[in-house]
Each structure stands twice: as structure tokens, then as C-alpha cells.
Amino acid sequence: MTTTRRTRSDSARQVADLLRRQVLTEETLPCEEELTAEFAATRNTVREALALLRDDGLITRQPGVGTVVVGHKYPHGLNRLAGLAEVLREQGAVTNEVRTAGPVPAPAVVARRLGLPERSEVIYLERLRRVDGVPFSLDLTYLPLDVGTPLLDCDLAGRDVFALIEETSGQRLGYADIDVEALNADAETAAVLDVPAGAALLRWERLTHFASGRPVDLEYIRLRGDRLTMRARLDRS
Amino acid sequence: MTTTRRTRSDSARQVADLLRRQVLTEETLPCEEELTAEFAATRNTVREALALLRDDGLITRQPGVGTVVVGHKYPHGLNRLAGLAEVLREQGAVTNEVRTAGPVPAPAVVARRLGLPERSEVIYLERLRRVDGVPFSLDLTYLPLDVGTPLLDCDLAGRDVFALIEETSGQRLGYADIDVEALNADAETAAVLDVPAGAALLRWERLTHFASGRPVDLEYIRLRGDRLTMRARLDRS
Image (cartoon, rainbow over all chains, first blue to last red; front, side):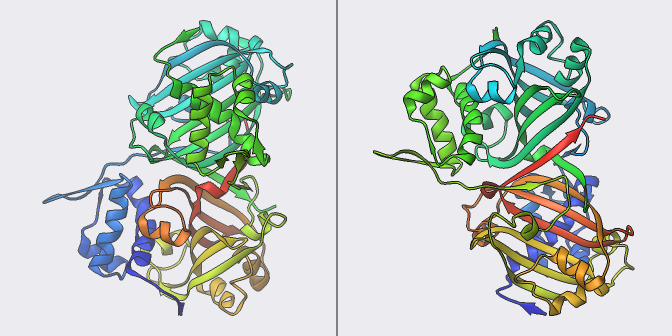
């Protein structure tokens, strides 16, 4: 065994990684004695691993009860393009607080990515999305006028934009190019999403196209890191 | 236009989102006057947007020079399974500091996911991976003995585990199931990755299979959020 500078924190991180999936599928965790045996770890290492999961907001420890799972993450598949309500159909009710909806002059980058002439008008939507009443994501959306204008008369509070686009345009969406990053929540975004300032967020930049290839929906989405796991299957060839 | 509770911070976030891609492809940003015109925003909004990008470590502002891009993110495709050195072939030199390498008893979850009998031995690798000398990710890897043992005699510091597995086993890797999350760096992990405590990280949990379907490589990977953008194309159907 080659080992350099291995500390209790290194072992605790290792144990926390192995426990994390269990946390997301169980309601309680085994007691410290069982975890110590399971991971062939010292009691201090197990305690430090549990502290890491607690700091991530996944568990609490209650005297007389043990370790209770409090975090709840929703899985979001990355292999298929789908709206949030569609993805979470069986897991929670999605509601959207529409913070802004209407025409704006397109900044150059928006016009370029949507394939529109410079200084076109576009429809801008800003929505705070909740799952079962708890903030989940803040979505900033730019749509060409012909695609976006009909949406202003639709149920933006209750429906996915993807579904509304397909219904009002009569065209199918085809594919999206997505960039995913992790970043710390600035104070104002943290307040909107109801997380502590600095909390880890996922940020998506997603350009969605009609099946014809025309780009029709440019979105900038911040999602709470403590509420989402993205899932994908990657092929080697 | 429907608008509720719109603040300067809301506008600043909107501008920062539009500037962020530009930051990743340019060396400097236009001056405040140009940005103010481009985004039809007030000077205070533009300043707040630039402050958001500065807080994310992407830019610095230098008197007499303007806004200079300092962050550098590597794109990592999510549509194809590949090792890090393979992905970054043209963008940077990947080196691995091997922190641990050797046999350990498999915890139950590891044995189960790798399809091994309970209490089997597995090979455990822990590597700090750098790109051009700067920490990029901390990888914890579990391999079945027959797959992992030959790797202990290989160049783990200079090569991807994926490439080494394929070379030593004579079998092709087929696919991987991956979970992606964002989380805040705990103090110890932050020190290893050379980021501030609490910095946003991406965490991957990835189970890679041979083309035959046999699971052979279980990895828990923490990646610096400020150095990575994941890219994917999602299809609607």
C-alpha cells in the first residue's frame, strides 16, 4: 500500500462518500457502532464523516433517535431533454413564481445565439420555480418574439415552458446544448432561493432548438445544489 | 410586461449571466460605457454584474487596464465516457499525485456496486489530479482485484485509469452511470484542492462498466467548480 500524508479527514471524506447515496434513499442511518464496523474505521472518523453530511444539510443527529435523514434530492436525467415538471412528475408539484414576463431588446449575445438580427425584441421570462413549495431554481429565459409572445397568455405559473412552446407553436423541440457549472450563491440569489449566502449552486446555460434545428429558447438557470442530483449514462464510443 | 419586486441585483444577475460566456473566451471585457450601452443597463447595474464575476474568480479589474479575465475553465463533454487526460489532450497537461494505492476490504456498498461478494478485497486509489500544475480534482477509486492489481505497477502519476484498465485487461470499457451534484468544499478538501473553504465543487459518483456490462471502476470525484464546465447535448425523444 502506497500512502502519503493520510489524515483522519481523508478517511472521513472516504466514508462520507460511501454513505451519501444511502442517505438519499434511507430515512435513518445505522448507529455509530455499526458504521465503525462497516467501514473498518475509528469512531472519530465516523463522527467526522457524519459531520460532513450534516454540514451538507443531509442529516441531523437527534439524541435518543440517532441519525435522521433530512435532505431530499431530486434526480434529473441528463440523457433526455425535458421540462422540470415533466421530470419530477411523480416526485413533487412544481409551481412557478413569474417575476418578469414581457418583451425586451435582445442583448447582442442573445440575438446571436437565437439566430436573430441585432437589436431584435425578444420575450424575457424570469421565474422562481418551487417543488412542493420549496425554492428549487431561478430561471432566466429568452425566446424569439414569435415563439415567446403566445406564452404570455398561458399558464406560466403552472406549466413548463417546453410544453407550452410545443403546444402554441405546433412544433416539436429537438435538442438542447447545455453547459453545467458549480458556483457559490451570491447574497441576493441566495435570498431568492432561500439558502445561505455562498451555498453551492448548479448553473445551467441551455440553448434549446426545434427539431428543425432553429434555436428557440435560451435559458440561464441556477439550481439549489442541496436539492438536485443530475444523472447520466455515458458511452465510451 | 409583468414584473414583481425587480431590484438592481436582479438586473445585475441577468447581465452577469450574459457576460459569463464572453469571459470564458476573451482575455478582456469591454469598458463600462460599452457594457452599459450593450445591456441597456445603468452603470451601477454593470458594476454589480462585474462584481459577481469577480467574486466567482473569473475577472479582476485593474486601474488603467480595465477588466481582465483571470479564470480559466476547461470544458468536459458529458456525452462520451473519457478520462481526464484524454478530454484535456489539447488544453493542458494532467498529472496525478497518488495519495494512496493498494488493497483494502470492500465496504458493503462498494462490493454491491462492483458485483463482488461481501468483504472482498478491492484496490483503492486516491489521486489528486492537476492540470498544468494547478489542482483540478480529488478522485477516490475502487477497482476489483483482478482489474486493479495490474495498475499498481503502471504509471498512475502520468496516465488515466481508463486507459490503463483497457491496456492491462485487454477489454474495452463500455459505459458509465454518473451522478453529478454541487456541494461546498469542507475545510480539508478545500486545502487539498487549494480553494477557499466553502468553495463550490462538483461531485461525481461514477460507476464504469466493461463493454460486457461488468462493473469495474467505482469513483467518487470532487472537481473545482471554478475550473470546469460540463457540456452535453440532450435530445427530446
